[in-house]
Image (tube, rainbow, N blue to C red; front, side, top):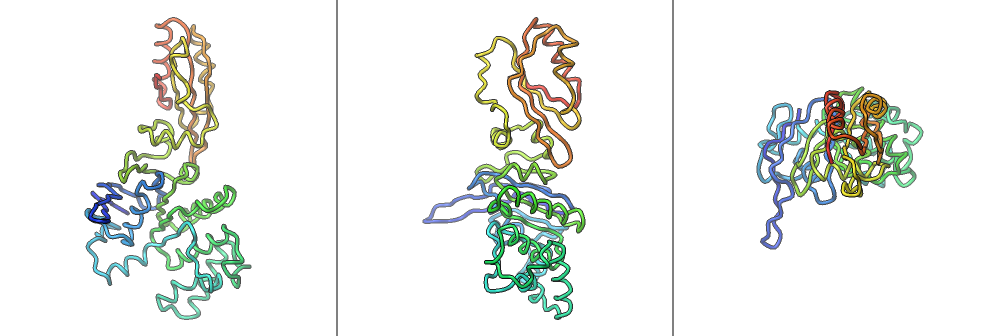
Length: 335
């Protein structure tokens, strides 16, 4: 669906070159919800704005359904943009127009007739549960309602792709969940591919199929959400996962403070619900000290983590580790 190849974006200020995006390569599949996460300044918003050429890439190519959009002229680009909807952190609604008029705006730009517009807007109002707000103005709406209007407007012309640039960052947790539920509904029922820019790992955990982690303009890690949670490769990924963990952070556990061997277990899917510790105790002559643990509920599965101290004979501990490693859904890391 979306193929990004060797993409970079430079800005020039006072004869200095600032590279916001550095040689990014990504493949986003049709019908998936793909997250791009990073701290402020990581380059993620610049990247998403390159996808619809609100920002012009300095180098590289972006293919959408096999079409290189970086090579399109203005007329062809305008036609391609009809296939790409976008929602923003601060909604970007027209304050002097009603909810109905905001949603109708892109349809009027496409010269739809009045009956077509009225039918489509009322369909969308019903779809986002705002039929009773059609004559209200943005100033009369809550943050969640404003974002629902913005989402309805973004899908008015039935795009293939929806880009969300921090679309939930201005919302409280309860409202965020309702918006994420709506986006998931749009993906499942309308088949729209969604690319989500966020700095919130909770959003990624809740809704995304795969995720790319950006740092200093580069993609430092990319994988399924389950595998990122199970076995993060980078410090950045680990810090994002730690940010939503209620357990003791691994960084404060110093192996020198313990006599036994410290291990970190990661469980995927149903393994997160299995009594792994009990099995080890029953099958091996070792003692176990549980230092921390948590389970993260993802969109389609669960990922659990345990940090354990294994105390006993070295050979018996190694036998236990081999037992754990033979379980395909348990990842073992010696700290």
